[in-house]
Image 1 (tube, one colour):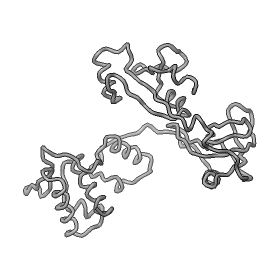
Image 2 (spheres, helix red, strand yellow):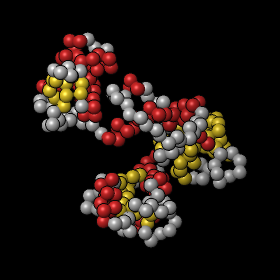
Image 3 (cartoon, helix red, strand yellow):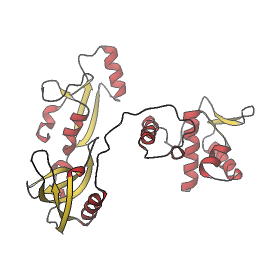
Length: 278
């Protein structure tokens, strides 16, 4: 199936699932196709998904049937809600969402952390070439900015801030550098660092999370559903370099270790297995 046709059929299914109706005008307004093409798209969708829709003459619209079943894999709650979030932040416009009806919504604002685009551009260029670069970086462990050579090999997002993952010649280790704290970049040189040596980045570990034992049976059941747990446990595979961020973001508690913030809903079961990476 050609990309353009597949996109229009996915749009049809998206509208049908979330709003229950579709007509030719929806396709014409969003994609600018002709009336015959819109009719052909609806006909093709009916052929691909027989029994999903029917035409209601009184409303002059196609409606979903009680047997409607998505076939394109484009139906996802997180995807729908993420679009509302991106609308709030101005990342996308309403006509880019596939949504016809947009409910009233509000999103808790986040800090727009400043990242110099020229610094980012230089880091991308160096990363692509596999080189090293001299950066001026302000860490929170030093009173003033310090110049240091780093060999970047990846970007990382901790849920709040973007980092560049790199080998640091000043500390002789791989670590994360917050992009917004890179004040300046200068000389570039050939890197002698092999990113495969970044063991925390290349090694994956599994976090095992369960509902908090202090919850009532009803509360525990809803937490297990919310976290998509199976047999009372959900397993999340993450890079070893991300473990601290995951624990901090989700406030995961180890029942025998008081060093992390308390989460009254869930606990981490296998703290001992991951402690060496924190």
